[in-house]
Image 1 (cartoon, one colour):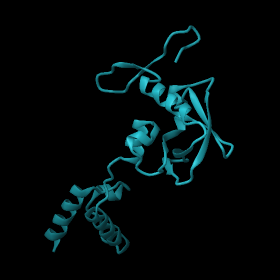
Image 2 (cartoon, helix red, strand yellow; image 1 turned 30 degrees about the horizontal axis):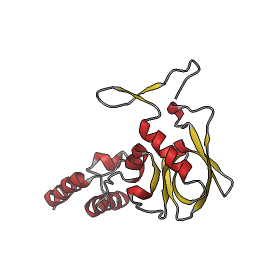
Image 3 (cartoon, one colour; image 1 turned 45 degrees about the horizontal axis):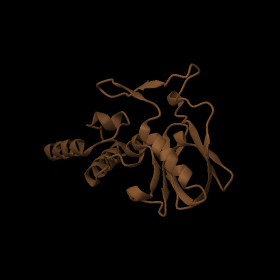
Length: 181
């Protein structure tokens, strides 16, 4: 992106080596070109849905006709506002900073060839992130909370503080239950 003096803006990458990188990236530029080539086609979106307390992602099986890709006059990487927005047949214009993926032909698990635009960071951290829930963790937390309702003191500080229990905590809880029996 060029600033008011015509220089390319650099943004800290947030990696451990703290190297600077260009924003937007060359991959972003290629993806915008792919979007421009897909004007007039049906596309599927994975959109960001910011809430009051969390950030969600919305996958939809509704296709939208891509009517255009427009330059956005005030991009801001700190606010997640990209230099382009897309125009859809339902009357919306959505900034690419609010979209995790745009694909052709299929809304779910598109191939690389059918993926026109993808924000890898958003996809990996919001959609594809490993979940910590397991049957053991759910069972351990449920037993502890039922015990709390029945007046039994909690042995796990994570549950007392409203935190979550992961699989290793469930194993610890099971050992504590066996000791008390």
